[in-house]
Image 1: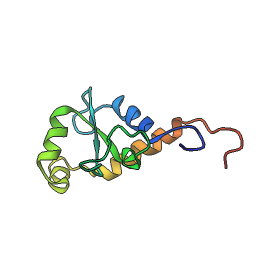
Image 2: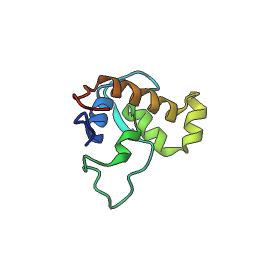
Image 3: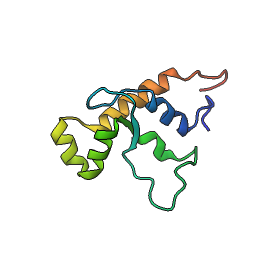
Length: 102
């Protein structure tokens, strides 16, 4: 947990409220750019991989998993890591800093 009380899963919840980064439709699936991997507990609220999510509608989420990241990005002329960074910066701006935080 961070000093502001947020957890990685809070970012996933934030992503669920956004529109698809490709077609701007909602609802979305949080798509992890860094794989959590088989055998790991995806429901663990403190996995750092949760910070690598982007919002994709079901159609684009499925399509992204059917192709390489590079092919998907080339097709839609988008940099998904850049988009993730933008969402993360906006998310961090919504957090309340507690007194005494650096």
